[in-house]
Structures are given as C-alpha cells and as structure tokens.
Image (cartoon, rainbow, N blue to C red; front, side, top):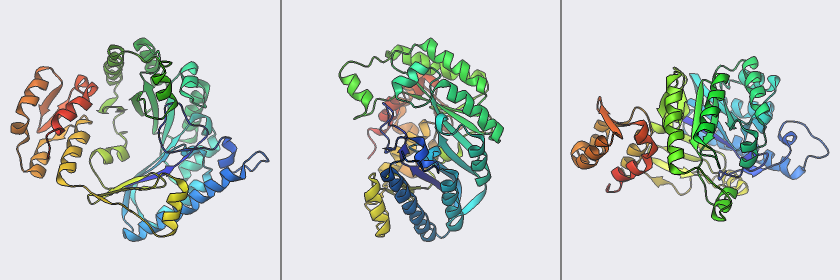
Length: 395
C-alpha cells in the first residue's frame, strides 16, 4: 500500500496553485525557531495539524492491521517547512502502526529556499527519507517572480549541491513549461541547464490555469499571455526527445527518469494500487472504496478527534474502474493493458474501439505492442482528447 501525507503549509501561495494549502509566512515558524516575530496563531495551526495527523496514523494503522507500506510521500504544501523533529515524530508514528517494506521509497517535497541546509537534509536521510523532490519550476528569476515563487535560481543550485553533500542520490526536479510569454527556445535552454545538475528524475508539467487562482483572474482580464498551441506542442515534443536522447526514460506523460529511478509512489497510482491519504484534503482508495478528507484544517481535525473517518465513501463501480484503467494506462509509456480491460469489461477492446484505434494509428498517435495500447509522444500531447474518445461511451 502507498501512504500519502499532506502537509498543507506554504510560505506563500503561488500564483498558479490551486492545491489545498495555508500560507504561513516566515519560514522560521515551522523550523523549530521561536522568535518574537512568529505569530502564535500559525504555530497553533501547525501543532493542531501534527496532533491530528498522529491520531489519524494510529487509527488507520490499527484499522488496517499494521498494513505493509511500499512508499511514503510527504506532499503539500511545502513539507520542507517542517523541522526535522516534527518529521521524526511522524515517521516514528508510522513505524509504530504500520510495517515498512524493505527498501521502502520515502519522498519529501521541498522548496529550494527552505531546504538548502546540509544538516537538515542529512537529518532527513537518517530518518529514512531517501528521495528529494524539489519544486524548481524554472531557472529564470523573472519567471519565478511571475509564478509567485519564493526562491531564486541561486537557491536551486545551492540546494541541489547541498543535497548531494548530505548524501541524497535520488533527486527529482519539478519544472513547468508553457509559462507566460515563454518561447520554445527558452524552454529548451531551461532543460539544457537543468540536466547539468544531473537529477535522477525530472517532472515536466505544462502550465495549467486552475480556477480561482491569480493566473486565472489575470487570464480572464487579458493580462496573462500564454504561448500559443503550436509553441506548446514544440515544447513538449522537443523537450521529450531531448531528454530521451540523454538517457532519461519517458515513462509517463510528464515524467522522465534515469534507469532505476522511476517514482515508485506515482507508479503505484498509475497502476491502481491501494493508497491511503492522510491530512486535510487527502484522498484514499482501498479495495475499490474511495474517500477524501475535508480540505479545511479545523473540520478535518474535528472529524478525526470525533472518530469520523472515511465519511462519504464512494464505491468504484465497473464503469469508474474502466474509465480509470484507460486514463491511467494511457498516461504511461507502458500503456493500456488490453487483456486487463477485456477481463474487467467482458468485452473485446480491439473490436469495441476498432474505428478509433485505426484513425489514431493512421495519425501516428498510438501503437500496439505486446498486448498494450501505447500513445506516441505526439499522442501524449493530445492525451486528454484521446482518453475522452475511448471513455465517452463506457457504461
């Protein structure tokens, strides 16, 4: 089983972000330093979150009979705002109530400005954290400022260097392409600089304008100018080809890894493995049952303290399972397992979607190999439309 821990705290909210998070300002407030400038209210929120999370870990560890975890992922928010003492409390509690698989992957998401300390990162390694995922997003200070990020390019280089000194040998860098006014050449230059840092893994996401974000308001007011569709297509296709030439395996639409460094946690999602999500707004799916925690910190905490776990459970019926099988399978380089679809649906996939498959194959958007339907790089670029074509008539 996979375990996701949602840490809902950020220094500030980025202009494109729609994730559930609480802006808590000064980095010191979560790092174990108590200064006169530290607002007590924010510290109380962190303490409430930690207290509730430990109760939630205990409940589910007991309920699931000390289930074995294959991965743990600290996401957010900005987990690296937490002091090593707080992270130690969480990992020790997980160890007490769950069984950790030998060779477990433990990832922590971090921002460059909040994790550039050798002692801090070395402490995380000693606690068992063995994968660092840095939210770089861009190597251009002007872009970072427009995104609302708190770090600079200098922070990025410093933190990667410090992480290597501390002993991390599995580092992911998150990047965003399709930034306002960004050219295809600028994106390729970013990738050429990034690979010099020799990360084991790269996550390259196209900018998505989410509702109720600053970017969404600016776009509606025609104050945000995004690259056109052709430019974004070049960014995706040329960027993927460049990374593949350098030995990065393009194993999922947005993810590239050196041999042996695929993200096991995210692969678990794409392979529809059971996962438990703890913390506000976290989602769980276990034995075809799905539920999501309240996004409001106080509501989530009250529910946990009153024993209200997994309320409003959704049973994943056959139709939902088929849609997710197609959607998750086609996101990966491995592709959709046709036999698995046939077994779950009781139908023949190749016959059912013959016309769509032939049309997409003629346009070189997909191929079939060893019983899997696989999107090409050009197919991945329009994956949402392809997935919609396959899933529209299910049920």
